[in-house]
Length: 431
Image (tube, rainbow, N blue to C red; front, side, top):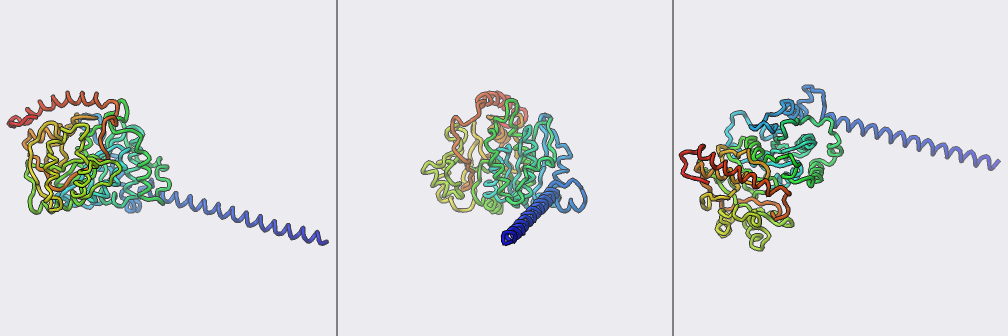
């Protein structure tokens, strides 16, 4: 009898435990379905295919991207590349009134990259914090990847939303499409936000170098520079590489300088270019840069590879302008262009474009500086503004075809110089 009671109690306890376990399974199943519905809702907000007016109002960025892609882009002058201008527009550009005076946003930054270097945008935007135009070159599967991730950046990164215009360039035989089938790229990003997007881009960084995308793929650097330049309405533009950083407060200093002195129509404003050891923090001011320069942690850009390419900047003169390290931005001195100088500069929108025949490595920026010289421009060096490249440029870190490409572009440069004689027949200047 006593044993029978114990057995009954055991059965009751066991039944209760089974009921609790079953309820837990049902609860977990409910949570899983609820999470799935939430994810589907989030994805429908990101990718929603029903183009109702309500959705368009809720996500105008998505609808603009859809429209930009539906146009099929335009072909470049060679017919070899497809260009999607303003694939993603910033809030700043969207809110500009038609016909507004471009001087209302005096200076914009323009840059170019492949998807593997786009992670540099994070530190560039952190320093710049003003309008930025980015032209991205993508090839093969990276066309889809690039489209998905510029969309993700525009969704999850408030500063990108506010300030960055994206343009996409691919081969003419390729077309970009809306990333509806690439939702795996967005998994978890709703929770991780902007840092999660840049973390994903960071993981893609070592796929290839810009000039070594593929044996039959040419990186159209000058086309990309022109696309980025024409993608902004700013009165003045600074074109730099995506792995470079300008000095702090450059935009504010430049706008203040314009109140005292506007550049002449035939003048560009040169920012001395440096490179810094990878382990060092980017200098914000000229005084910080000079301290690093004096101990060898910062040196002239391309100092090891091509010292002549930046020598006309006259670094010793600029460094020794001690009295102008912290004063207002102004022209320190003006110098004549000399081959093979390739300065980074602030120029008006009317400055001649880059010659798009130059691709891959060599002579792409020198050719444009050469044309400015023949066209009669003068080069005025700014007193305390500068740009810095992340890391020292050293021999042995370039792609295997660098020398071959350089020889090819050297031949192209010779014919380019001849063409300038016809373009500027009254100019006494030659390269």
